[in-house]
Length: 108
Image 1 (cartoon, rainbow, N blue to C red):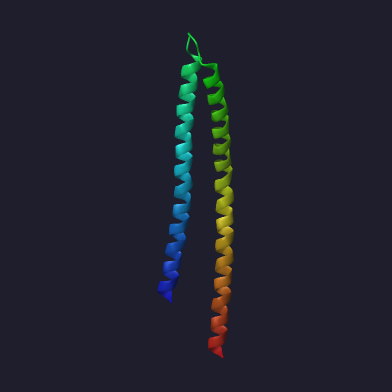
Image 2: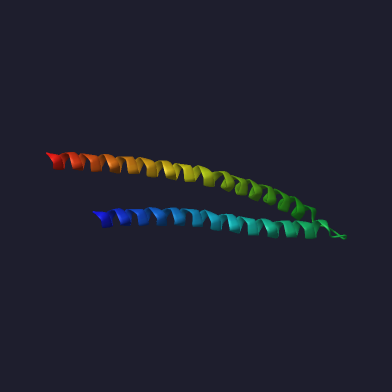
């Protein structure tokens, strides 16, 4: 029975790690895209001859959308973490109730 508990702990830890790692990578990718978009916008706005106003407008809109996604990711991580902890708490409570029932049945 002890090995099963250890494997559940390992699986729980691994799932949390993968969960965090996945979102950390997505945030890093979005930040890289944001840097490249900002660099392109700066290049276009600093052009002295014929800046592409259509491209500047499109880059500005894309930067705004990307910023919104980044801010949503910033809010999503704490919320998802809280949901995960609530699920774990509920799972642990159910597991403890099942263990208590097993002990009660053994006493009979």
